[in-house]
Image (cartoon, rainbow, N blue to C red):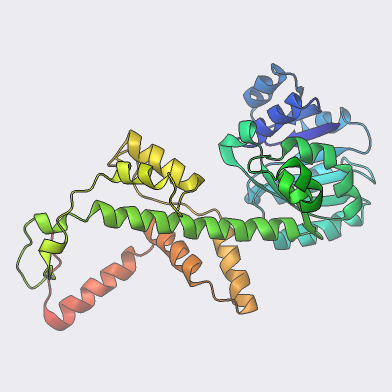
Length: 335
């Protein structure tokens, strides 16, 4: 099949490569000419503009976007003006599912099909494939089957005799429902990811501080005493523990694999400042939980921890210090 890809970043470029390896024809476009040129050398057709990109496609045209949510909408508006009824626009980035619902409705008035595809797999997708969560009308989704199958991961797939019974989910992609459903499922997926990452981080942090009882502790009015220092005298090899948990443990996972590699390479993680960004999915998941009255305290804590890492708690911390100073004359302790 033929498809155009807009956005050749960490994931978009590798998706083009995976499609080329599967024998599909790809037209590549990005605002960075060097990204396009790199893929042309690997067999893709290049385009220096959206107009040139669309001109190289045959009907029904398939245009897949891998762009940040902040610019996806404007790009969809621009490219849709170049398309014809029956063509398909796919948003594979981390856009808000509410936007997918609105965009599908808007594009349908032009006779265009809009498909939202939550795409997971990160930088390893080229070799291991992607997990694809799809929303949209059944007919255009069915038309995309060869593309989806080429991109999808077969990691952990069911034995061949069970695949037909299990459905496409065992092949790494699933039509989740109407427009918006794909991005809704991916949004919740990323919310779970936030919470899982936070749980690992907190656990490793406790292990790293299990030797607190070996150090002396200042005795003053600004320092809480360690009640039982003898209970915290473990100088633990955190990278080794991380590796241990990868073998037979109930907490083994790909996220643990990545954590183990990072700790093995840099036990103190000195290369990282500790500022953890959030790109929106955790917020949207929590908003949906509030709308529906679904308790998600674990995600809420993980999301707020990210805000704190970004320095957003600094003013609140200063207010706390000011109050302590005001009612008790407490002076901030210098590190």
